[in-house]
Image (tube, rainbow, N blue to C red; front, side, top):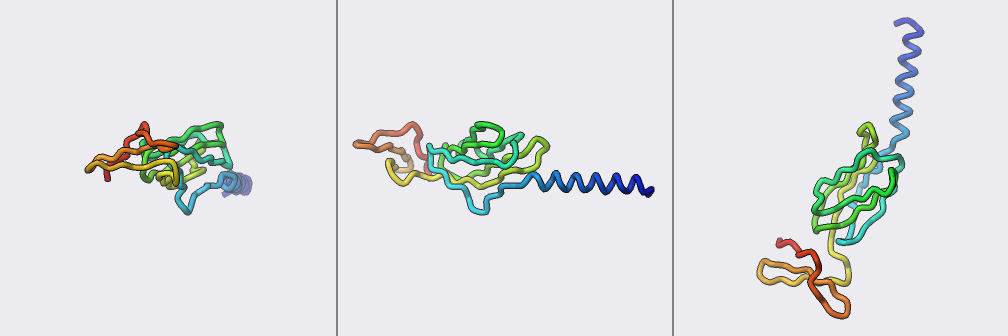
Length: 133
């Protein structure tokens, strides 16, 4: 390989390595816990091109700007959220666990039918019926 071509090849490989290092993946080693009907903010280190939610019945993502996401718990369960940049490299990937809040709600069972009740000074059925096990 001629010296100029080799120099160009080495330069191209160095540029690709630097570009890859600039985009770091925010992988969560622990699941991200979100209470149902609550949201959690996720700040990305680079702009997202796409955001994927494995099961949109469990969690939803609102993109505030290219670097800020809010993950909202919609239904009980576990799903995964992935954010990738414009060329498909992962920026954020996490398992999301949506569970009941610690206070202010009660689940009432009638046989296999469950109803989630929102409670303040009194309890009333919430908008969402809890799924049967």
